[in-house]
Image (tube, rainbow, N blue to C red):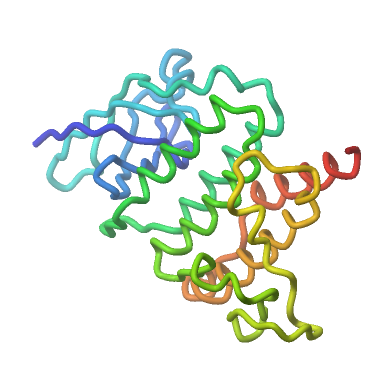
Length: 234
C-alpha cells in the first residue's frame, strides 16, 4: 500500500550505514515515521533537511518500517537559509513540534498553523510577533489554551496558578497582550518577548513535557539565547 502526503520534515537520524530514519508532519495533521533508504546519498541528503516541505510517497510493507521517498515542494526556505535568526527559529519550531505530537495521534490544524508561520518568516522582515503567536496557537491546539483575547482586563499572568490576575506577586508577570496583537512589533514591545518565552515554557513543560519525561529541546534554548543577544544589541 502506498500513500501520498504534503509534509514538513521534523526529525532525522542515521539508520544503519546509509539510511535515514525520519519523522514528518503531514497535511493530514499526523506524524509519519519511516526509513529513507540511501538517505545519506548526496542527492537525498540535500532533500531531507529538517524544516523542508516535501511531497512524500510512503510505502507500507508488512513487518517492515514504511519506506519514504520525497521531492521538495513549496514553500521553499532557501530565501532565509543564511539568516541565522530565521534558521534558528525554524529549527526550534521543528523540535517543539516533534515533542508535541506522537505517531498515531491527529491534532487538528497543527500543520496549517506551522505552514502559515513559515510563510510569514519567508515573506516578512519583522516576524518575531508571529513566532510568539505561533507558540500560543500551538498550546491551544494541543489542549492548553491561554484565552488571552478574552482576558484583556487583566494585567498579569500567574505562573503558579496558570491564570490571569490583576495582582502583582512574586510569581506573576505582565502578560504581553500588545505583542500578541502585532506581527510587526513596535520597539516598545521588545521587553515583552521574554514574557512569552517564560509563559510558554511554564505551560508546555508543566502540562505536556512532564507527561513524557521530556525537557525543552536544545534548539529552542539556542534560539532564545540568539534572540536575547540580538535584543541586547538593539
